Image 1 (cartoon, one colour):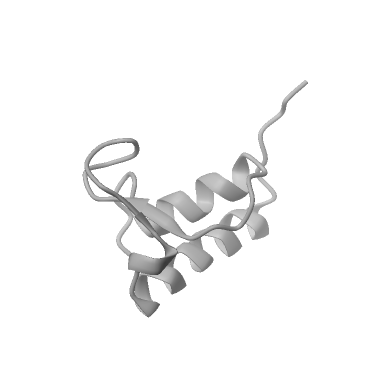
Image 2: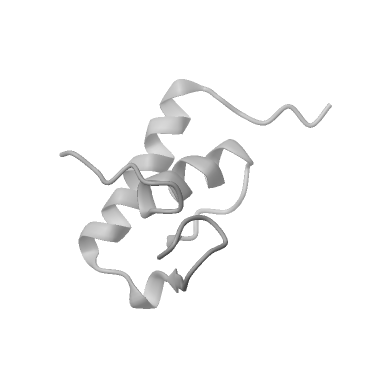
Length: 69
């Protein structure tokens, strides 16, 4: 399945949350990260939640994580 890769979209936010070791909490921004409307899990479609989860899994598989040291 192909996902919308735009900055702030569900796939992007899933990847970023995993990278920064934030909790799994599906969401996205309508106008890019931190811009437009914040859409949380309650306002997301099943496909959008699946895209967030796919982004999370994609980053998890890559092993990329923020070095806080």
